[in-house]
Image (cartoon, rainbow, N blue to C red; front, top):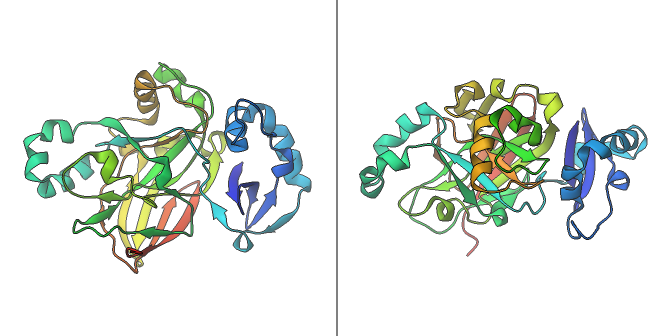
Length: 286
């Protein structure tokens, strides 16, 4: 199932080139998720799947191009990111490390997780707004996943059972010294979309092709099987540090081929089995 948020938080099921409004089958607000029916859907998807499927068979449908797709995550408690998860990306980063980063290269180039601000989220079709900084700002197109079941100290063998589905994420990054979280958390620095594809439709998430084009020129092209730390181990590790809640977003690390983006650029991100999203880049609004 392809689940989407659109037109102000309505919930849709994507079928070919159409979207079916299934908001009526979504749970009402309650004391646990009073401000977020999407988080309740993530947490109770097994129970809600049948009502959603019935609504998708009978609900109002419209062409996708007639709606405004939003990021298929809504107020997650956190965005957890993987650092240094593709060897070829590490190789391309070594020549551009700053002196401070080079002095701590063993740490900087080692796999770990860090946080990105949820306020940086935007949806497909939106614009990435570049801050007024002298630093280069890069794209990092990644496979991301949405948690469906609370995960705390999970074993890798059970980790994927906690995944609701997968989506595309671009981890926009300011290059330079300083904390990763700060450099990656500017507003609009986390485009996600175009929708969430449930885990059963994806199958093996370690066999997906990722590509990113900038102005029609291929920048990134990789298969997820080349990750240093596979997704099940990443979830297990992250859950040993922090409790992963339904609706949380985890992104799996940048493939090689990162590069600068500039005002006026057009980005096309694609992941096999999910789809593609298009984004613009604009300069500072002042």
